[in-house]
Length: 70
Image (cartoon, rainbow, N blue to C red):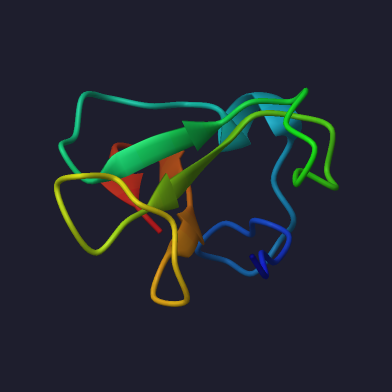
């Protein structure tokens, strides 16, 4: 799984607290800080291309910033 550092809409790197912000969504999965595939060591959200929340090559790291998904 290739995941890039989350950035906000102005292009600045966001804090780990901002990366973990979430609201209920049927296609968003949380990658926990302790996950062996998580190189960032903090929680972040991943958008999955199906409601089953399987992570694959179409999955994207996302964040909820100012009540909008990026």
